[in-house]
Image (cartoon, rainbow, N blue to C red; front, side):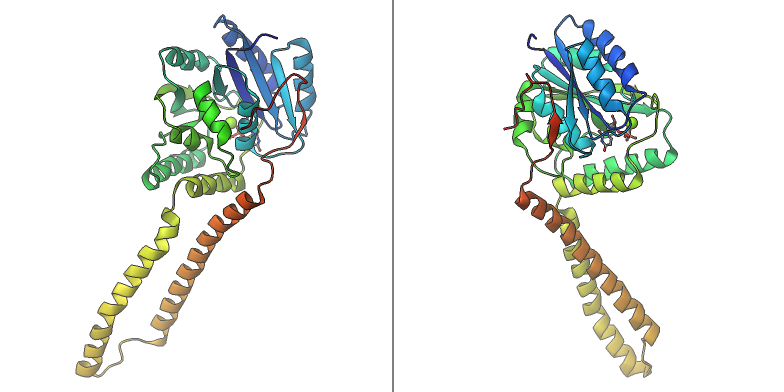
Length: 316
Ligand code: UDP
Ligand code: MG
């Protein structure tokens, strides 16, 4: 097979009904570029028969390249594996549920041809998503923007094109808890956004339940910010400052009016409040320590059970 110019990476977890639609859409779009391409489907431990559908597609079209994981490792890791295996001069990450319309890839490629090394797709509109998802996502992007010093673009998912220069750097970044959209911003180079309308899912349901969303948000924050760790310091200064002011006030009141200002209830509330703040601070430290522990163990990011014989993992 000739070396592809473009590698499309689609992480797939139980997308049985979407794969038969994804493949022809990607094929029709990519054939318009007039350049060789490959579609790397990373099977993230699907249990619904998606794996067999991928194998069959690969039998009929050698440009389809299934990389099959030994179990579910999560979306960000699956996308990472696709990037590790890619051979193209430009790599495009796309969701398999067709929320990211493959047609937009042509706009991404156009910008790449103009000389941009990271072209990310910005969601101008999100159709068919719950208000809960929209509100939490919007808050999340703004929070990340506020507390990190990496310029992570707002309302931007993993749907993006990366030049092979960027891919080479990404292959060296082996952190276990991954926030790809932040990592590809951190790299630098010439970056630009392209607006698009995010569609509803073609079929099936979201593979991101609330628990995974929270985990994802925590990974993003801890990977790119120390702010949560500094919070304890700030609250400590405020509490200490308040107590310094409160001591003379209470003393004067006691001496002049003779009444004890504070009752048991007030004491209880303050003890509970500060106890709570301390436990939360410990929990925050715990989040970071857990991640340090995962890095220290240094286990492989993913385990590939099956990949085409001529595919090579270029992980640095
Ligand atoms: N996905 C994956 N592993 C997972 C969860 C999701 O590979 O553990 C894939 C999924 O098949 C889809 C993409 O990641 O192609 C985005 O997931 P989803 O559409 O469920 O997320 P949402 O769009 O609801 O945020
Ligand atoms: Mg989706």
